[in-house]
Amino acid sequence: MSESTLSPSGLRAKLQQLLLQLPPVQRADERLHQVEHDVLQNLKLRLEALDTPGELAGPPETLGQLLEVSMEQSQVQAQRMLVSQILAGLTADEARILAAFSDGSAFPMLTVYAGGRFTRGEVVYRHSSVGRAAGTQCGDMIGYYLHRLFERGWIMATGFEEAKRTEYELLEGDSGFRKALSQLQQHWPKLKPQRESVRFSPLGHLLWQQLVADGEADREEE
Image (cartoon, rainbow, N blue to C red; front, side):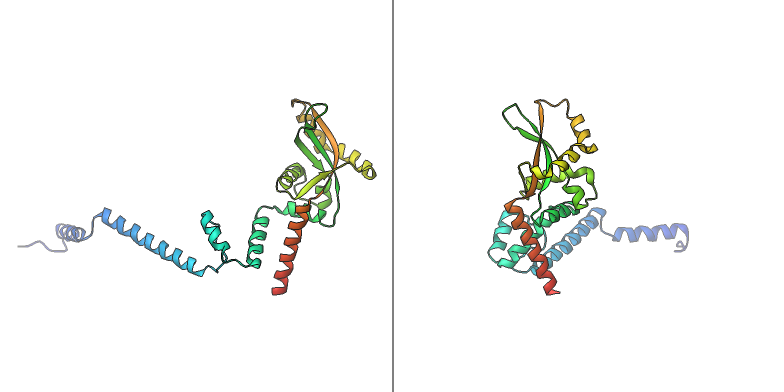
């Protein structure tokens, strides 16, 4: 007499038969990975097909990709790519600082140099009132903002302005500047604070004009 299919032993035998019909776990994993790969590859091809000639859908992966795009770019597309890269390298506070320079204004700046008696040496620290005038949120980071903007060629240092002597004296009394000097007391070679001014560089003017022109073009399209 055969065992009932509803008995424990009968159910166990039925389950074993079903398991034997399934592919091995390794083969199932391989199929899953293949399906995933095919889906991602098709998605990539579809996104690439959506690229507008002369533009990139995302960050470039190779120099060759940039050179290929450059062969199809219009002047407008090249300008927008430039603007996109400029904006990607700025914080909101830095944008405020640049806006403060945009009318041609110069602001007092204290620059701490490391060098000998007759040499200026490298810049160790900068402090300026432009951050306060621009209304930056991270006022204690003005030295870092200035460092970044100098590195990118946005701004330049010019000489001491006698008409702003009182502003320099107030700047020298700022707690942030006094604290920085205190922390730099052990620096060697000897440090020399200098009164200077900071303003847009010629390149800074050009970049700002490009950003403004691009913003106006976007408003006209709307």
